[in-house]
Length: 167
Image 1: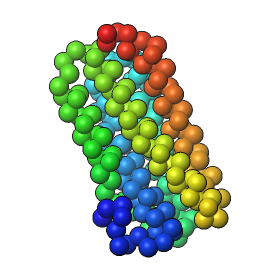
Image 2: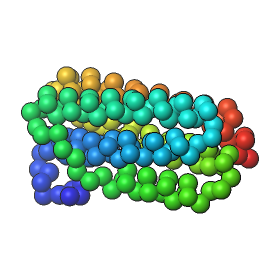
Image 3: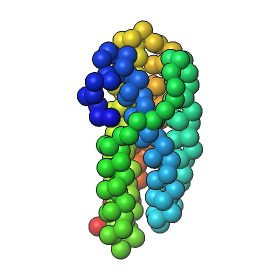
Image 4: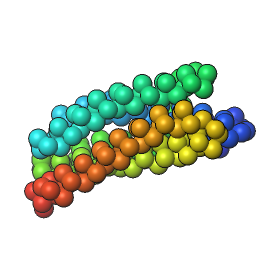
């Protein structure tokens, strides 16, 4: 089911569909992060990705909480965007032999994921407020804040040493 399907008739429908999209994304990220962690050689990057793996488990629980608040089934719909981002990350990781360059590629891939999540959670939180669901919005904003913090941490790691070591 694509974003602009006949199943989406109302703003509420769009909200639920996008929740299901990001629910799929979070599950795919839970599968991808351990592989990224295993491939990195930078200890700070490994620690940041490991911490974000734990946070991502919490993001799934929060989404399930929002589904419950809305009284709708917590189910995923395919998210071609995250699937593509993860596929590209896997292809790059398979092609890079130099471990320092691979660490830089992993940071960039992880940031692509974070940026996607930031757009989704930002929209969802705004939409929840517009729909009069401050309860849902507060849960979504908590995740949005964690995604932004993870992106900031990755930027610090990249600028602090990973990119310089790759160069």
